[in-house]
Image 1 (cartoon, protein in one colour):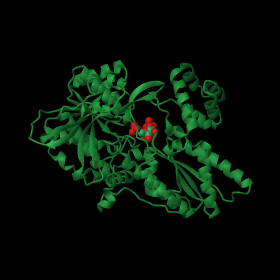
Image 2 (spheres, rainbow, N blue to C red):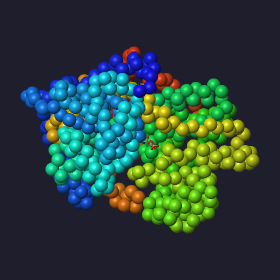
Image 3 (cartoon, protein in one colour):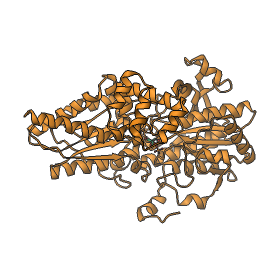
Image 4 (spheres, rainbow, N blue to C red):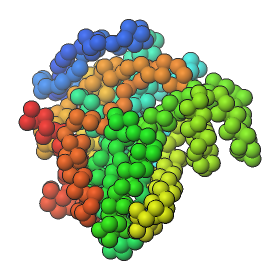
Length: 558
Ligand code: FBP
């Protein structure tokens, strides 16, 4: 393991608080709520989950103490890193040891690959001691491998049987938790007693719904980005010479942009869901930025900042259609996949691909700069998604804005100076030292996963509610993953997946943003949140995300 900095060492001694209800795990009893099968569902979905579709939501209440045998549980980290992953593991480990001191926790290396290949690490007090409250996923590593083919299911079954596991905890986003639901169904069908439990992870914040307040990692990542954005805004105000075009991670939804905008007050923040809702074209977005720059230049201000969501391109109607066609085409035609590898003849290659697209999509693709065309044609991720983090939307926008400003300058309609800096904040937020909020949330999620396994629940997600209240009042639940599934077209095929939660344009956080944004446009109302605080008044150390607080207070006032 790499050496620890003084702050990392100091954080090892932080003891996350637990919700009161989780303090006596072995005396908690599940209380079944509404069965998830009573929710409206396409019958194709029900057919995929004959064993697990009818499971109820689970609440827990204190009852008689029930001693348990030792449990053997496996844990895997899946997908992109999110701050707090190590605390899910430490919460799970501590809970298993409380349930029975001889319980064992076995970590799988390299994400789901480790399950397929049976690559494991027996987790001990000593191993865990240097990972408590630390960022990253480096204890076990991670991957985006999906357990999908019959051979992979077979390999997973062999591993789980060889290790004789009572439970398997899958820490992941929407795709990984979907995978957890399929594995739970498969194990049950095979008569295996291994319970599969998911934990909601992703910095993107799009794994949430009426049962899940927020995925872990979102809070820390947004605080890391907001610190940097706040500093850039101060720099803009000091030097008065740059426009910062800052792309922020979040493959689909704009939750990160919305949260960071509310924390820092940039001059403009683009919300992909609004772009789609209002059917804005790329030209409309460019015009919106240009209008802001011209208006500020009229006040003698030639500096500022624009926040851009990573997934923007997929929400612009003309791009959405083109990407749908491209995904379908590249998934179906191996000849084109081969062409993708021939880097030298880009023009020829892109024209050949465009000739298979509709007229509008072909026009859209051919009208883009070569660098963006190349990025759009890169290999899809294992889930069939375009790798939006590799598409330099911030540079595309700068390019188009600059052209338009030059045109206006020639017409005498713009007299300012435009000097820009493209930035992308993504990976640096995914492995930061987790905030107190994420440390405590993850520790509680780990405990709840152990509780679900102890109570024989499979195909469930670990759920913690009431997150804007003091930790002692947080609530605990088992959420049937089936209840979160719907059918979606991926790589040209219908698939059961957990629906990503996009920014709700009717919701309280977006309403807050709309109320303030006109003011941010011209005024320098910049806010500098500074670095994550671990010690001090709880107002500084334990604040949940602003978007979550606005959502919860809106519910309270309904
Ligand atoms: P998860 O959904 O797996 O948590 O990952 C989200 C994310 O961080 C996105 O914001 C980003 O687009 C993507 O991962 C980048 O993936 P990769 O690590 O494969 O480059």
